[in-house]
Length: 278
Ligand SMILES: [Zn+2]
Image (cartoon, rainbow, N blue to C red; front, side, top):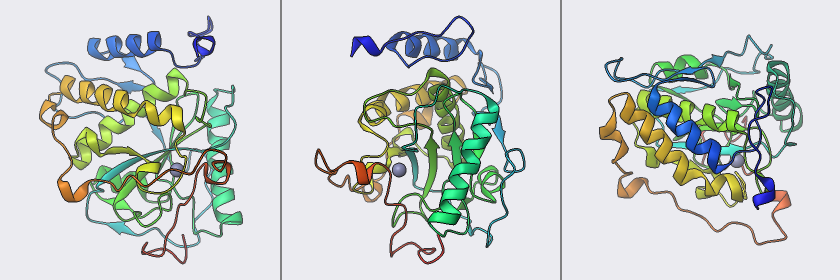
């Protein structure tokens, strides 16, 4: 696996995530730097993980939904990490990120027949963070949740983050990872959830998503989010854990050789309130 290690390129574009970059990112976070467009608070700053820069639907020219999303006045139990199971693009531009959001929306609406794009948030390999399903950003800021279509039978208790790429054998870019840390820290803050609420799609559904490599990084992700929460004065959340009744079922993942059809789904189930419309 050592052959897959690459560092940041000289022009600042992200390479594959390596332990060196992970450590570097952690050090920068502790120092209160500007990373991935997110201002990291230092001691004495406001006691909340700030919202990273998130591009609203208007920025990426989203289509209108066929019906308005349902907003629940309850926080989600889970923050679900997905991969898009799309190509590991080396185009790290904002234009590509916005195109990705449009492509996912088109697929969800035109191929799946859903009312809108399924996930609440999308992160590109260039580290750009986009609003997904309609009403998502205002709902999150208010501590509410939009019912999405990304994790079967749990869509009324889960906020979903789609991370661009296929992480069965590759790892995310540093830019994507840093934006994922910032996004999860913000979600833990606004929803008052512990870092253990950050789980993979496979913890709730029988799927390979978010890929073996990204899934294996979730403990590190929780630690990095915890470090950021601690830096913003929210250390109490870091050591908290899910209540017993909140523990995910951790269903068996598909057998080797059968993973391709399950690289992402299932996203909707009969127990979801929006099972008919997505
Ligand atoms: Zn997924």
